[in-house]
Amino acid sequence: MGRICTAQNFPYILAAVFAVFFGLMGINPVSREVWIAEVIPVAAIFILLCITFPFFRFSNVSYGLMAVWLFWHTIGGHYTFAGVPFEWVTDLFGFERNHFDRIGHYSVGFYAYPIAELFVRRKLAGPIVTTLFALFAIMSVAAAYEIIEWQYAVVEGGQAGIEFLGSQGDIWDAQKDMFADTLGAITTLILFWVFGKRWGSHG
Image 1 (cartoon, rainbow, N blue to C red):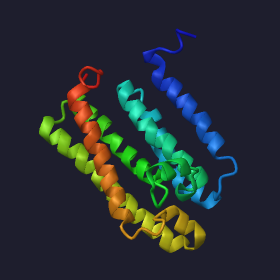
Image 2 (image 1 turned 135 degrees about the horizontal axis):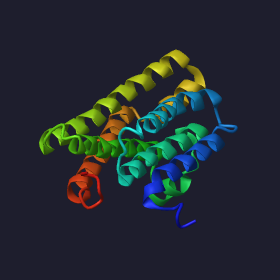
Image 3 (image 1 turned 60 degrees about the horizontal axis):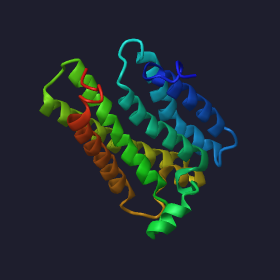
């Protein structure tokens, strides 16, 4: 068992655990339409990481950070983000809405870390350009996803459209989501430059 659970095998174990988890979360979701829409980007990123693994292996820290969003978004797809049983957090902090989705957006920003790692290890740019590119990449993806959510809600309509949009009555939901994405990126970029070399993320 000790030989299996090593740092070298971490990505394989993580991928296997996620694959099983993904399958379980696909059983009897609250809304099959919402589940399909939500897991498309999850499946796409997971498959992309599997395909690129033989050609570029990120650090275990990067894979761990990327996995946070994969797991979180998969849970949201199963329950719908507004319907995830997250009441204990809502009650604990006195929130007026379910912030499970907001944390999910924050975790999207974690992908700035592997982007920065790719640039540093491939020597594609200096620290400033690397940081700005990673940050702006996340901000661009965040904005694009909000547009996709909006269009899906318009085209699909009905309850599925509302659940996928997940605004929960907040007129500033899109802006707050993008801000959460950006904060996640800033947080992990700070971690990358402060601790990344020690964590083996600089090559």
